[in-house]
Image 1 (cartoon, protein in one colour):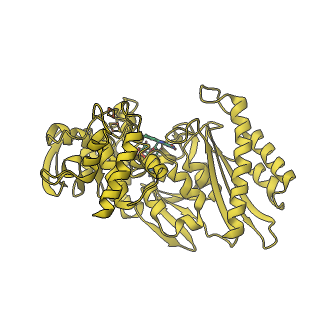
Image 2 (cartoon, protein in one colour):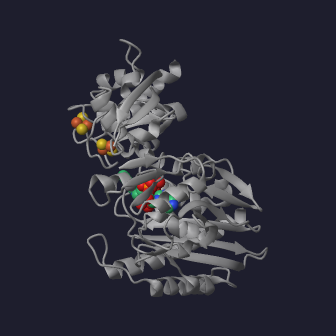
Image 3 (spheres, protein in one colour):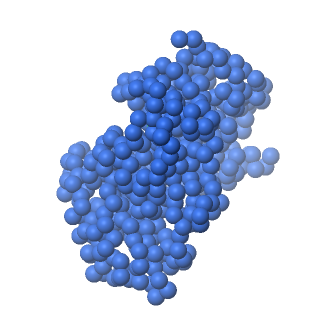
Length: 158
Length: 285
Ligand SMILES: Cc1cc2nc3c(=O)[nH]c(=O)nc-3n(C[C@H](O)[C@H](O)[C@H](O)COP(=O)(O)OP(=O)(O)OC[C@H]3O[C@@H](n4cnc5c(N)ncnc54)[C@H](O)[C@@H]3O)c2cc1C
Ligand code: FES
Ligand code: FES
């Protein structure tokens, strides 16, 4: 049958695309819109590498259908830096070596940004619980938590 | 595979009734995983999130009506629900990660038909009633009667859950939900226990409901456990009776996550602890 024609907003820009019912938002972002920053780690909601914001909520884009985002707002890792200027979270992930292979990193940045927008001064425990749906096979998490805390400090200073 | 996102319950019911292999889509955190692993391959997906009634939380007849497609994250942020129904809200918030919380719904948790679904024992203990919409109109079903067994529901063709009604709360009432998992986050309940109760001004329990998850083919309403504590102040003897009644209700499976003996034992312990938390909350509510 005919593909769905979807009109939506991605990173603030009006965007349209065609998709099949079974295409996930992650498929659409990566394969149709060429926004390949969001990663597919598991396709089952377990790893968080595909994290995006949907109408201001952190979700796994592998568990959202492309069709569902008609008329909604999607924000991805591609919208986090402002031109060449990295977001403080991105800067701190680099400074603290909070990544190795980097597959998990876009998901961690998107998820951490959502946390800091709600809670500008989270404890270690709050960071770890909030990020429990983001898996990293490389870093052992400590450096990620440190980077998020340091970014929180930078953001509070403004 | 077709996709529809109707804006009324009536059109959703008509769509669901007209296609044999149709599936409701709420948060998709079960459905999309099952589609991906070829457990289900529906001909039609009916997204119910554009139906206003599935998405709102409103006061009704002194109780609360919660849309079937309200997410865990939204329940947590609701300014008043958590005060009246802390157990229901904490159970919904145990489902998955922050990302899953942004999507997972009470309706999906119930209608996925898993005996280990976390919010279901809390809803049953709360005395929640599901309002189903179907081609013949609407009907109310107590939550404990919705699930018949693993993946088996009492809903007829074309019917879906539109919302839940949490009943009015007398003074000095509260609830609690506890689960046991081998990790601290992101795991499926080995046992889940929900308790809701009301006390009088002297601290005696005047009403109670107890529900257990993951210890039988469906989530259980354990009337004997409630009877064991009604009229008591949850003294040691009443706690022992409660534990014994909870254990007696269990007919769990044996698997790598927990043996029968372990699940039965833990069911008793969690029920007691949940009752004590609910009592403590009722005293200060
Ligand atoms: C990483 C991860 C972790 C998880 N952790 C937990 C956990 O800790 N505890 C737990 O209990 N669950 C857990 N789950 C399972 C799942 O998130 C929950 O069961 C959730 O509540 C399902 O809700 P949903 O809205 O996403 O359902 P959906 O996937 O949209 O639907 C689930 C099923 O119910 C049907 N359905 C949905 N809504 C309705 C309705 N209103 N009327 C009739 N039928 C309906 C659908 O057709 C489908 O068959 C987890 C899932 C993931 C991916
Ligand atoms: S790819 Fe979506 S959670 Fe792993
Ligand atoms: S840096 Fe490799 S998975 Fe996290």
